[in-house]
Image (cartoon, rainbow, N blue to C red; front, side, top):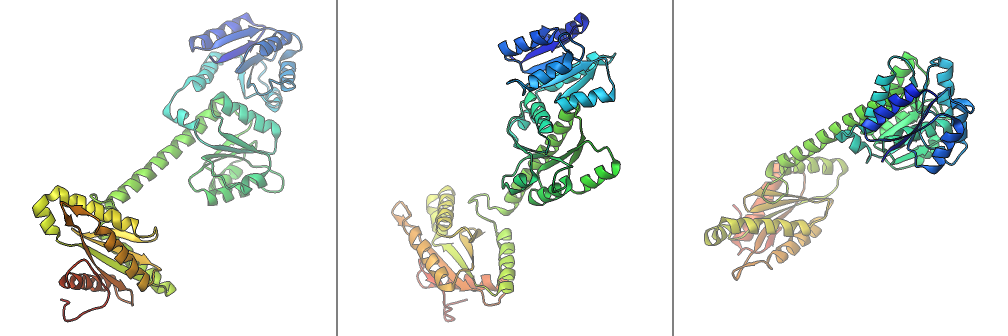
Length: 427
């Protein structure tokens, strides 16, 4: 169970803190001086320390310094105090506290808000725990503060960098980047620009103590998704992080849906290979590429022989199984660079970029022979094919040549690949 140590001289505030955390399922320990607090820290597994500034034994500042110099320096610390001066705030944040809550009329509400960030179990928060995070800051203290903030909220897949060069030399892509603006040797803005070039989809959050609208607008225009001011408020830090993570997740989901839609639009639903329309578009694109580099391009058109007989004799379900099997055989017989599609009911077109005509013919023969091993009740499945080489034709003209060769192959007895026109036989 999540355990909290509250250090305070005030019985009133002890009661408020214990009541709020206990109601939310936390174990709450209390102390009113530095030595007792350190003893509890040594004897118990403490996940969070909430300390007042005014406590016996040297004050909250001494407690924080003692913790920082102990093996327990990574325990997150929240400061509560009636002294809300900016000087004190800056000093406490410089010592590594992750949040600062004034003892004023808003104390209870602020503490409840803090607890909400710890207990909130939204889907986005849970997904955040599985995201990879990179933090770049040349200040060890600032890195420690961010580490504590993230760890307090269960975000542990984090890499910390004190030098920009090490982050930029890494080839790893992170889901979320925290980038400090003031860095030695290179500006945080330059780092942001470089990361954005490499990883357009990642979330980039700039962090800085500079509160200037011109600087902020410049950083956002450079590619940052958000800008967080130091020192951080834990509740605001997490709210902004969750908001950015939510946007990231939504954009990824939209991208996946678009990808699935594109697959549906371009794919033959029976075989999983490309459909006629997409295949034709790809052929036009490959012709354009071939012309621009003066390369080679070959085309194979396969047809399943006696397919009407198969449907009539064995039924359309068997016919569908034959089509699927032939698609798989062709797919396994071509390289990853080849483009396979279902051209019509029982025919398949294969586009072979950068493949010589002789190699294309060999590929066609290998696929044709592999199809001969399929039998349906002692009936061998055979393929006929036409193989052509691109010689400056349009996509329609090239397909027409392949179709004529396929027609020739069938006229000559089927189960063969034709690559030379026989005008006595062709249509």
